[in-house]
Image 1 (cartoon, rainbow, N blue to C red):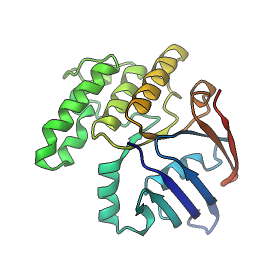
Image 2: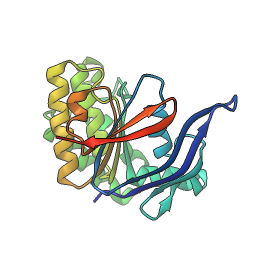
Image 3: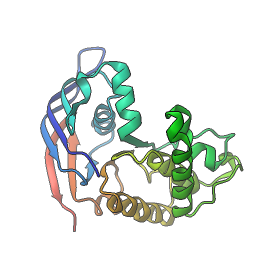
Image 4: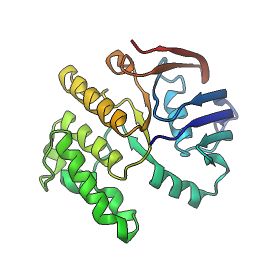
Length: 226
């Protein structure tokens, strides 16, 4: 089941003191699918990274009962490992490894008792996404196949939160639409909370809600998806 999100007075500041992101308040119900759109350089990815506790920030980012920004670095890393799956635009796969090892990467950092479970989940997710777990290096995969490996990796630890940064940007339309369908289905089935930064209206139209970020400010909370 996804976790609720509550943001209050969130601010991310650059080295020169410039405010890169400011969000006064935002509430997201557990299990919601939320899109984030806006011009390039507006602060969308900064928002996503702040939600994952990947940037120094002030204010409150509360996932369930946990204020992520109040945690020490080690505990924040532990929360992210146990509760957040990240899907990246540029895949961030180990090119020399196969789909099975890439998708099960989190098993390397999991407690021993959970490693087999994580590997089994990674393999199941790959098959659900139309890929066979294998050792053929992902360097030979298409862009769509690589992104599917990235999605399987994000889901392998059964994280209740998914954060996706332009997940379809590197894909042609047919591959992007197939990935959107699978990502939405896998999120809905398990009640995960999904927050996806994207310019892709095909993806944004499948969200429950769309937010607009411009000049580092959350300007509006968008409309319900059709």
